[in-house]
Image (cartoon, rainbow, N blue to C red):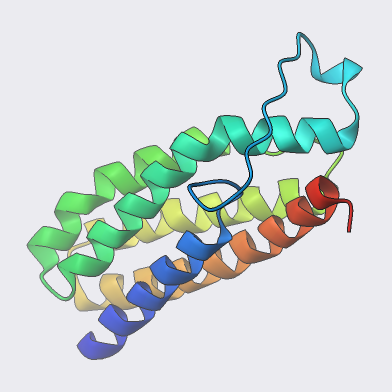
Length: 156
């Protein structure tokens, strides 16, 4: 069971790192806009992706630290504040409402990551196992959100 927690959490972090909307390998499009109401859905998606990049990076880093803690409960618990803080920050900065699927899936993923942090804080093996499942679910929802966002931003 302990080995499974480490492996799956590490895979989830790797998957999230590949799902980010922007980053060093993605083209950057900056949209300076006074109001999202004046922007097309495409432009709103691009603007959100660019503005959320630091928060997504913080989330990925928090998930990496959680994965690196492995089965060391003390180390895992030390990561939960950053995981919860990063998830809450992104939950308060959801993708534009015009990208319905991305917005709903993104909110689901952040709630899953917050629940994972709470499960780790229980301080039990069962809590770690539950966190593993919650991180997997959150990663799957994040992938779906990213796919929806990518469709809107890339026009595909």
